[in-house]
Structures are given as structure tokens and as C-alpha cells.
Length: 465
Image (cartoon, rainbow, N blue to C red):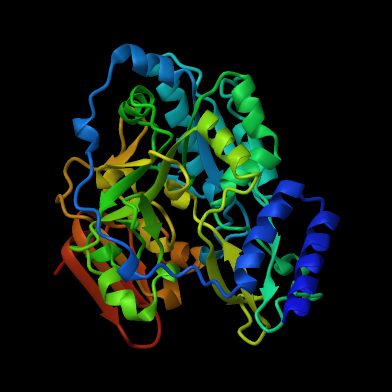
């Protein structure tokens, strides 16, 4: 196997060089490929971690106005924008999907950024990490905002790595669609991509000191000056925003402490089957990562130099098929990292407890229906927040994936837009159901239409219980 794995590594490196990828990206691939060959699976045993009991809350942070103003003028807003929304059947950047009041994710993000600048009097550049598939359309959308550019390029590109066959650890070949031979190395690639693109050095040269990083599909992730000022005042190199876990979060990753007392994140793929009960125990492991992160740019540069260009985040080994739509296609490993896991590589990294409203990602049409509905509004600061007249409960939407998973099917069944959900706690639909104009849902609503053919909810219907 050693000779085969050596051949696999050389083949992977050659493939990346021929594709024009930077040597730093190749070095990172070499690091994780070595872990794969060594049999590492990225599992974090429950026996080697401890739960986190308490965290400082955002409302308790004490900040100084002068420090806040200085930090804000040295901060950059970075949005991860490489996703195509393929799980919803999209073939363009998910951030260009209409999400609220005729605005796309990217429109709302730009409005949030411009509002922050006006209110705080700071430069606050908006920077995107794009993929080759999202770059052109996203930059064209940004170009409509003439007052958005400052002194930085608008984006940089994420890296990509070969998918590795599970049988012989060689880079997979798939002539039917060569683009499927590649995968992004997880959102943990953001740090390496900052280096390989030259953006990290440019940020430092222009006097920027702090990055606020979040996903473009999470409109609750607006730069919060209190966290930034706290970070600057206490010279914290890395901050991770955390929310309290609920029953809805049992399957997601959580915060923990390592044996030496440092913070770490454990994702679902890093928990063994035998540890799943403890992993899903929301009273034991109380906090989950929002993927809203704060990074000291100088500290990031120092860590890369100290680690010789490889950040060394924990590996996540995802087993998939080369063609996700073809279960008979060859099995492959995708070697990924999570950006929140950088908690482990920064000495003095901290976590802060934030309200649930800072975590409103759209991963599926379930989330999109809730966000498009009147259960959420855009406030005077252009933040997407729960409507004031809401019931106060977290809205849960559960649509039948057979009829609502893909965006065209979803929109066909809501031709007049979403029903009113502002008074709804849970909205469940099973079967093929089309909704008329002005439908209202209150409380816990479950619609179950098992018969063949489509059922239509009439205009103005009020659904309760």
C-alpha cells in the first residue's frame, strides 16, 4: 500500500499543478493525504473531550467607544460565497436567489454593509470568497452598487483538491464529467485561500487587522461592533460565535474542550457510532458553532508562518460517490476541513454566546419558506430578524422532499408566495399541496395529503392545528 499511496500522492500533486493551483494549496493537500494514508479518520472520541459549561454572552461584553471606532475602521466583512445551492436544484450562486422582499441574499448583504458604514463611519470592505462557478454572476451583481468598492478587490477564489478513490487512494478519473473529479476542501479552506490568492498580504498592507467571516446564506450574520471591540481590547486572536443547542440541533456539531483545556469543535462526521448518544445530548454539549467567526489577520499570518504554510485543521474524511447523483459511480473520499475548527490552532482563542437570530442559514427550501414569509422582517439596520408580532417560538418548517426539495417544484406550489407564518410555530406538509393566495397558518399546522394528485389550499384559508 505504501508504494500505491506514494503514487497516489504524486498523481494528486501533478493533477493540481496542471490545474494551476498554488504550491501552498498542494502542500495542504499533501498534509491531509498523508493523514488519510496513515488511517486517520478524523474521529474525536467522547472519552477525550469535556463539555463546555458556560460562555460569555454578547450582552455582557464591556467595550470602549474609542477602541470600537478604531477596530471598526480596520475590519473587513468576508462572506463565503462558493455554494451553488445544488441541493435545491440551483445552477448559480445560492446568494443570487431571491430571499426577501424581492432582494437576493447578496442584495441584503450589500445593504447591511452600506448601512453599517453610514452608521459607524468606517471603511468596512465587503469581500467574497467565490468558486469559479459563482464568481462571474456574483461580481456582476455587486457591480450594480457603485458606492460599494473601497480599497480592496471584491473577491478571491477558493481552492480545490482531487477526490480520492477509496479502493486504491488514487485521484479519481471520471471522463463523463471531469469537473466531478474535484471537490472544495471544505470551508476551512478560507484561510489557505486567503494566502494562495495573495489577499492576506494585501489586507495587512492596507492596514486591516480583523476579519468577520460568515456564510453568505446566513443573513443573521451581521458584523457586531461589541464582539469586534471586545476582541481588539483583549487581544483575542480568534473568536467563534456559538448558540445554545435545541432539539433541532441534536444532529449538528458542538463545542467541547480538549484534554488540555482548549476549545474545539466536533462535527457529526467526527463522532463514532458508539458516541452518538453523547454527541446528541444537548444538555451535556450545550453549544453549537454558527460559522460566524472573527480572526486577527496578523495572528493568522503568524500561525501560517509558524506552521510552514499548512494550518493543519482537523481532517474530516467524507465518503461519497464521484457523481453524487449516481450511487453506482466509484466511491471516493473528500478530504475536508471546517473553518470553525481553527479554534484549535490559535492560542487564546475564545467563544461567545450569541442570540439565535445571528444564525438563520438557508440550507433547504424549508428554511427559504420561513425566511420569505412574514415570520421574518428586515429592520431599520437591514438585518433579517424575527417579526415583532411573532409567537416567540422558533418556527420549524418541514416540507415533503418529494414535492418541495427542488426550487422549481417549491415555487410552483407557492405561486402567490408563502402563507402567513407569523403566528405559526410548526408548519408541516406531506403530499403534493398547492397554496392559494393569502393563506394563514397559526400554531402547529400539519397538512397530510396522501392521495394521488395535487391538493389545493383555497385562497384566504386559515389553517389551525
